[in-house]
Length: 340
Image: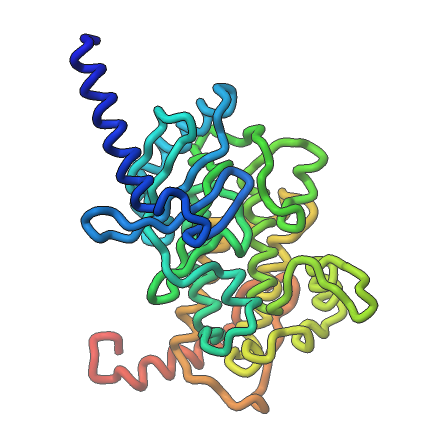
């Protein structure tokens, strides 16, 4: 490499650094969007007016830098509507800088748990978000928790924070990595094996699914300030057949009981202690999409309507009777179309 090339690269690097420093107002505390195990994320405004998210990574040693760069290479190739898009990066600085698209409506955790009446929290939205997230995770391993799921201007889900991400290949069955996730979202199997597998993601997603159903954080605090696991509480309520009483009132008001039963049992399957008994993320994504499609076939029924609860062996599926009712309604309202 000639001296002129090195000078040109140095000048370009300085220009990029200057723009990113200006974009974040020199790392102004008021521009911080969030802090994580791997760094700080700032809101930035580029010279062309675009709003972006600039992440300053804490990874500085070579041992962690190499897998980090590998993650960046993977993310740069991904263009998925439910994955936060990586716009650019600067890895030759003392602190690595990543530039992502800016997602304006905060996190799923904020949507569920903040006492903001302006947030839409319908069951339709929650079910759609669950389907979108499951679709993204089905091929991209990540640090799954509700605070790592962002919501865009239309409240569509965007999975973020890929510090432990790995693209799941056909021949790749497991990997060892530094765990950055929140404790209550982590698969108990991980603590026994110290190996991350794609079934760990299924467990973490199961926790998020329960959050969407119950609108409680992964650690419950009782009146006596005693803390207990949301997962244990949920599984116990399903086993004792009273989980409908634990659901968020908005979910219970909006949802068909059959579909709530289906989603609850799907979440329970995701939370099986034995990873081999869990579905894959692709199976989860397909099941959630099936529930959404069936939901669109018929309008909301009065709460006194007949409810047929699926057996444990039929977890995740509507009864044949309900499906046929759905198709009948769909055909009736489209009788002049080619769907008849």
